[in-house]
Image (tube, rainbow, N blue to C red):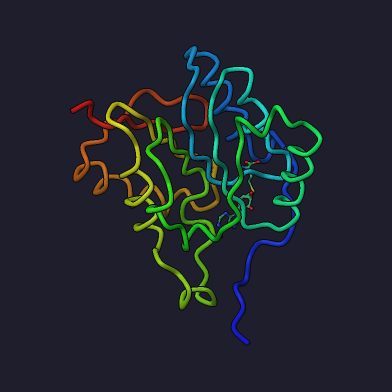
Length: 188
Ligand SMILES: C[S@@+](CC[C@H](N)C(=O)[O-])C[C@H]1O[C@@H](n2cnc3c(N)ncnc32)[C@H](O)[C@@H]1O
């Protein structure tokens, strides 16, 4: 029977190997950003971005395709009901994302763009990586941000998609922060 093949192992916070989430929350803090609506690609089992949300009144929806990470989210918000008002997690293959079900965002992180395309899952995909980039960044509000992670193992592939996307959509690159590239949507 057909079956989606997804990443099975929960990902711990390992700032040496994968600092993107910590760089992202430092960026939010340093810029004094509060009350942001955020789509975050790749929660990790640590849920670092979501756990920071209440302190700055952010509303975060994270996506995971890893069953234990979804279970750890359920445990977190059951044990800390306050967190659940600020942090939601969607279990989905990013390539099956249906943006008709999502709101507008102030910030979209695409740290793991191009990492997970699988020919085995292709028959079930709604989008490829270019489609993920187009669809999720279309949800960004005027003046909002999209962030990419230069340390991703698939960054070369993601970087190849960026120039054409930016030229067509008008997203303008801002100074980067640590390992992150940052683009702002035109305000009008
Ligand atoms: C390497 S971990 C990184 C987690 C976190 N951003 C960090 O840097 O610590 C990759 C994340 O992407 C998620 N992921 C893996 N395959 C995915 C897919 N097909 N669709 C959506 N998310 C996926 C995993 O569930 C995990 O949360």
